[in-house]
Image 1 (tube, rainbow, N blue to C red):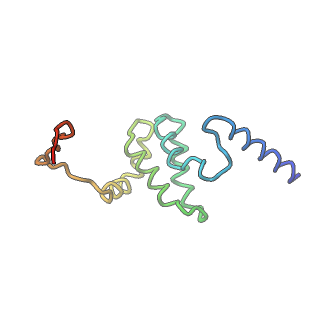
Image 2: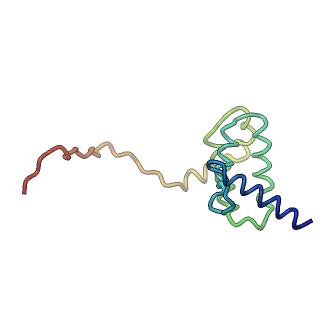
Image 3: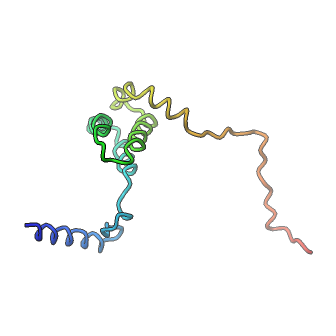
Length: 127
């Protein structure tokens, strides 16, 4: 039985590796959790809202996920940055945490005295 599962897994990963941008079996080829979260949040519908709510409620219960804090913060940030009627209840639940996250992010103020450098590549300079 175990041998059959191994053969199926190998044939699956090898078939994906032959496809353009397919999974080759290496960890580096896997998508990041942030990619899945972003793809789920941008749908902004009644089907994605319960999935995001489940992620927010169930993920903290798992102790074996090393990047759990960052993943949870990514879900909160994405929900907060994509407001829609489907996420209204979720936004109420995460409002305090989303505001804390936005305060902790580095924001560079735009200075109006900043001057754009002049392009001097067309000038002929002689030494």
